[in-house]
Amino acid sequence: MAAPAHSTGTDAGRHAIGGEDLLRWRRQQLSRGGQPSGLDWLLDLEAGVDWQQLQQLRLHPEATLLLNVPLEQLESLWRRHCHGQEPLQYLVGQCPWRDLTLQVAPGVLIPRQETELLVDLALAIWGTAGSSDGPHRWADLGTGSGCLALALAQAWPGGQGMAVDRSAEALCQAGANLRAQGLEGRVQLLEGEWWKPLQPHWGALDLVVSNPPYIPRLVWQQLDPVVRDHEPELALVGGEDGLEALRAITAGAAEALAPGGWLLLEHHHDQSTAVLELLRAGGLVEVTPHPDLEGQWRFASARRAPERP
Ligand SMILES: C[S@@+](CC[C@H](N)C(=O)[O-])C[C@H]1O[C@@H](n2cnc3c(N)ncnc32)[C@H](O)[C@@H]1O
Image (cartoon, rainbow, N blue to C red; front, side):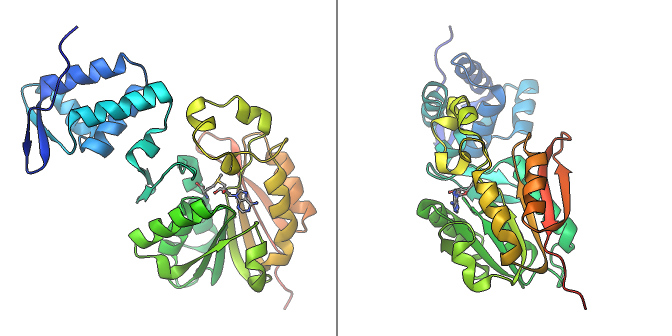
């Protein structure tokens, strides 16, 4: 096997490496395990070498690249990912999501790509980003990293946002992400159980979004260790049947929403029928399922009946 590649020098804090060496290093790392897409993601986010540059290297391996970090540092992160099953997003401390780059750390769920659709659904219901007709008061239940709250705060600068979580660690992370985007003035962070911290606003919430924990405990026990052993159980497990949080949220919605106000939920791929029933049983109307990009029913919307004139 070829000798391990090392970055050869620095250029204003960056680390020069020949293309051939980098490609050889990449092959060596993949022989330890892990997915090529994961390693390329690490090269992009941590070293600043994007996918297009990697493709170019295959055509011009004689080229020299500048890495943002020494190759040894990348190698140590990749080992931790392959051997300790640590999520790459925690290792690099960030996660791209919609047009945002969010800070993430152990103790807080890594935002998933499919959750971006909840924002699209909110925008479809309330009108496009920047519209002055956006919701006056909105809330994100179980905010985690704050991904949904940040996207809504960006979309409707005039609205009053509230982000709730039971985890102080999550709220701290959401606060850091809001500050990093200059959005901290638009969203109040509230610690507590689902609707409870919002009590002063009950009956006045125009829009509530939530991606609650919805994985049944037995399913969670069988998840990939990269998720099960590293991401917070509180963020993933929705009790024995996965519906515990969804029950609490749907049960309180009619009282907390403003007349005509909307609730938008994410749920597990096999929970659509149960969630639609919970929404109806909670007294909401216009109960509608929504698919993800693969056509699976992963979202639901419903509203409190508008007041009659
Ligand atoms: C699936 S994560 C979603 C995080 C984030 N909204 C996202 O989409 O990436 C669920 C969140 O709900 C929070 N949570 C769990 N139980 C809660 C409860 N009883 N009350 C409020 N938040 C809770 C967890 O701490 C976690 O941050």
